[in-house]
Each structure stands twice: as structure tokens, then as C-alpha cells.
Image 1: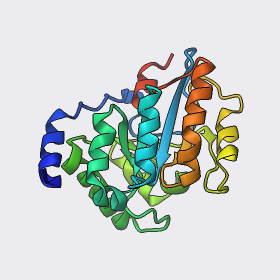
Image 2: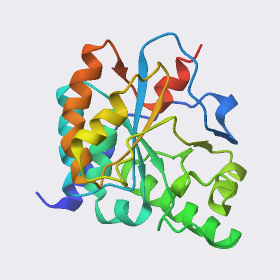
Image 3: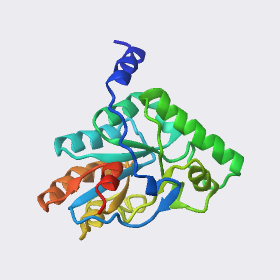
Length: 223
């Protein structure tokens, strides 16, 4: 079966995206989501990666966990079947710019956000309204453009700090050290040590009574 035929078949079986509550649209959120339930939103930036993202998806599936993937347009364009797998397996898909550049004009930011959103729509049918600015730069033209589109922009409240280490044990400890319900956890699905750490993270925090949900699911269960 050809990749193009696989993409055509997958397109028709993808679930619809979860609606984001209106109070988050056109806003940048940098704080934990208020909930008394032991819910966590695991998020991955910069992918999809043809090697590391499938490892992470396999681990999520094994632990019945859901996550949110903030994809780069240039990587999404190269890996459309992974985009479809992310959505088909019940995860949320969001955008993170096309190139990960931090400095650009308003016009360039508009092009990047438009380009990435169109790639996601083309291969999944999902109209992305979740966004994260590269490096969490909320005053960047990319983030300003996202807000002008009435997208919901989200940073994080817990970081794996996986760009500052290559040790999976450090990634594990950074995430598993006393998380609170409603945390938004930052990881990168382009990092081998993160992919290696995820199964242990999921196992430990699940045993602690936490449930991993997509960011839209967390927002809809906020209290």
C-alpha cells in the first residue's frame, strides 16, 4: 500500500479535535490549570521525529496515556504519517511555528503560523488552535500573531529540561519531582534521552494516581 493511500485512509478515521474553552482563546496561559483531579498534561515540542516520536507514542499507548504534540511545520511536513498517527491515537496536535526561529517580522510570523496550520490541516483534517511559541517567548511576533488569530497559547509549568541534559534519569527526576494536579509538562520528542525516560515517567506517575490527558481535555476539566 502506498503512503499516499495510507494518508487518504487515515484521514477519514481521524477523530475530531476537542474544543478549547473560550476563556483560553486569544490568551497566553503560563500557569497551572486549576483542578482537584490528579490530571497532568504531557506536552512535546519540536517534532515529529521519525525515530523518537514513535517510541514515545508506543509508550503512551502502552500506559493508556494521552499527550499534546506542538509540532514544527518543517518536521510535520516531512513526517505526515506521524501527524496522522498522533491524532488517530487520541492525542492533541498543536503548532510551534514552522522553523523555530525566534526573531522575525510580523509578516514572517504570519507566514510561519499560516504555513504550519495548513500542513496540519492538510494531513489530519484538524484545524489547530493551540500554539506554543519557540522558547516560550510570549512577546515574540509569532506569539502575537497566534493571539491575533484567537488561538490559545500555552507555555508550561514543569520542564523536563531535556535540552540541557542527555541523561534520561535527569529527565525522569525533573518531571517526577512532586508534580501538582493540572501541571503542563514540557518535553521534546526529538530527544533520544526523553524517549528513553518516558516509559519510566508514565509508570511512576500512573502508580501515584495521576492520569495523563491532552491539554484540551485538561482545560475542559478545569475547576
